[in-house]
Length: 264
Image 1: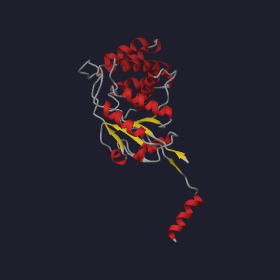
Image 2: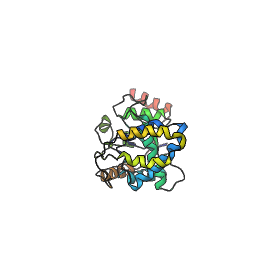
Image 3: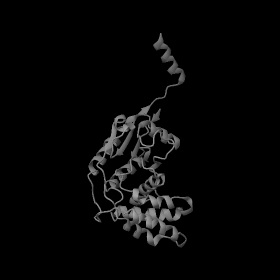
Image 4: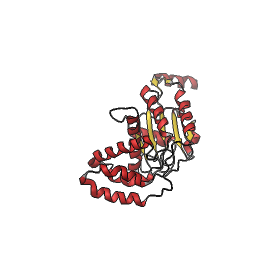
């Protein structure tokens, strides 16, 4: 007997949030050399998002992450992952780590839990296509990371603001309203400035200029809620309430016996 393996997947752009303006920071500092600084900023940004001092992530993600963490902790789901068509793998992985960091802070854990276990971008080589989102691609990517994929298509919940092939392949596909708020880059720059160590000042200065040039914000009013809250939570509760199934693997001998009998 083997227990059902259930996963929750998230698109990134305009689904989880509007985060692509952070890619200069992710590209420059998501590496082993600057990991301490990166994690310090990530923790500060996670706290800022939870307080709604910044709005890179949609407000609905906070209660959704609470529900996902509770289900993961109880063993109802194997975990979650990011699956985006964004071309910046560094950015997708940064947002994966940000979500885990928010969960850790929210639940007062000593370290971020590994709830979101995989980040897939358009650059991920295991994807059959850099822009198609389908069942085959998700299964292949999970396997490539040493993760057990769902055996059944009803054991995958996927959130996206766009229609994809996957929507017709699985019963639990949640189309969410687009989240379009653009956080003023000055808020992120102000958050990071006091955290920069002396040896990274010059590199941060370059990134800061890039962030400023990408500022397309039109409002400073950070959203406190969004239209995605109800459909996202409802989709998760429906998915999570499905009873776990155990599937029996028959021995090779028994499978061959049944095949022979059908041929007689």
